Length: 98
Image (cartoon, rainbow, N blue to C red; front, top):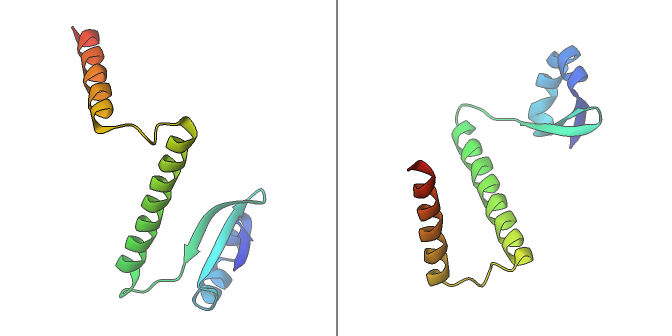
């Protein structure tokens, strides 16, 4: 996978667009840190590509929440406990609006 800086993207954009179909993906960096990924698509694949990226991001978010839950020890809470927490939060919110 090819890495290029934001500056290179600005100054060598024609070359980037020529190389992208061959490279498939490129990582854009700013001050040496990755900030974006550009990927080759066409009219037929753009919607599927976007859907795939969104699904991956959603999966990563779920895994992150699950890991955080395990670290905090909240991964074994029962539905009754969850319902109780929700009721309490709603009660507190209602008190603040009155």
